[in-house]
Amino acid sequence: MHRHAKGAELLHRRFVRNFTGMASVTRTTVGVLSVIASFFCLIELTLYFGFERNAEEADALKQLFRIPQAIFIIDIILDLAFRPRNKSRNARTLKWIVDSALILSALAWLYPHPERPWVPILEKILYSDTYLFAVLTAYSVLRLCQVVMRLIGRRTNPALILSGSFIVFILIGSLVLMLPKCTVTPISYCDSLFVSTSAVCITGLTPVDIPTTFTPLGLLVISILIQIGGLGVITFTSFFAIFFSGAPSIYSQLMIKDMIYSKTINNLIPTLLYILAFTVTVELAGAVAVYFTIPPALGLTFTDRLIFAGFHSLSSFCNAGFSCLPGGMANQALMNGSQSIYIVTSVLIFAGAIGFPILVNFKDIFVLWLRRLLTPRRRRHNAARPVHLYDLNTKLVIVTTLAVLAVSTITFFVLEHDNTLAGMSTGKKITQSLFNSLTPRSAGFVSVSPSMFLPATLLLVVVQMWIGGASQSLAGGVKVNTAAAVFLNLKAIIRGHASATAFGRRIALGSVRRANAVLALSIVVFLAYATAILLLEPRLAVKDCLFEVTSALFTVGSSLGITDQLSQATKIILSTAMLIGRVGILSLLIGLGSQSRDKSPHYPAESIIIS
Image (cartoon, rainbow, N blue to C red):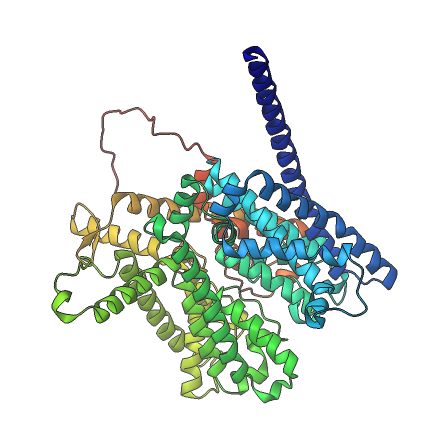
């Protein structure tokens, strides 16, 4: 009996082991298929909405959607069957909602359309194409976000992930923008690639006229590319992956924490929510403000006004510089009307260029102030208070930004008073001076053509394009943080101080070294691109080519009017310049280099002659 019992137990263990192994293989196989199906589903959606089709072709495409739908449902069921504890512990409420909605979508497939539905409203929703497309899109996006987070968790280089994600979306965007429903007239792939790169890298350079080339669907695609490029793929991915599917690995959280400037892992989700909520709130408020500042002389319909308000607000806050209005911000109806739209645009540009670390610092100060306000007065003196409410980074960015803006506005007003601003009222000249001094920092909007600027004004614009906005913001350039650190270090050397200081605090040596490296690299890379463009475009003026390279490399978007005259080779080279400018020259080089520990030999130090 004992021998039989022992044999039965061994058989049971072997069966459980084999069953577990088969279940694991099945679960892994279906998981891989669900990832492939996610790509397949998004491609199908693109084909379905991007091409003109008749009723038979539409029905055939709808039947193809059943393939990813079935794989997704099987994936959910296996997840519930074999990993119930992991599912209940990690999956968040909205993930459960998406999974449940996807399973419910099978009713319309398995059960024929009832003649007398029990709940007419519910039946109308479940059997609609919109419901099916929505749940398939939601599940596909969540599945791909989980894949990206797992890739991050494998300790892949963050800089390579960032640059690689931009390249992926640029290529996807370039293909989508060529769809017949996205353009009024067909465009070449080179132009589509250039526009997609410009949108993802929030630059604004374009070889085609945006309002007359792209349909409302094309403008929507450009808007999505701008939003993804502005906030960053990692921000979107981490939000969906963490908020919907639970916390990823510790390494992934640490990397995301550094990217979004969260001080602790515990503040990861609140900081992500704050960044996204702030972005959406500002863009919606900006759209409302823009809507009510549109002059009647434009003659836009209600729908066109909504499209222009939403697109313009998004483009302004993301410092993208795209406009869906003929002539852009230089449109005569805008110039001859109220100047309020230029003020609203300037506020949106400034908000986007100030940087998310500063916004997070402001949020922390507001939370601290609110907490102290709600704390009883007798307990306030015992409450912990940080030594410095404002970070050194915050003070340095705010002061430097305002100083550069004030100097450039006054200089522009003086130089262009009797040139491009001639004939305007004093108030209009001040508004236009402020607007045209703020946009070269990265936004790229122009209300007066830069080709008409005086040489001194053009030099001022180039310097502003080079400086750009704040680090970890939606602006380009070498960043005001870098410029401030370099000049403060120069000031310390001239005065004989051991280190650079500001606002009673010492700037770390590592920050100063990094700033000097970014400054030097920006010059080297600019010279390399300028040489290449001058060799490829000998028929164009040197000034125009250098301005175009500056605009692309520092992701500004202003042009002297030669973008549509560039050859395909030049457009591709400038596309790489926009990518490098968005990702960051130093970050990209660090990503391509080794991330191992410092193994440089410790040689004796010796001074060299620097005069």
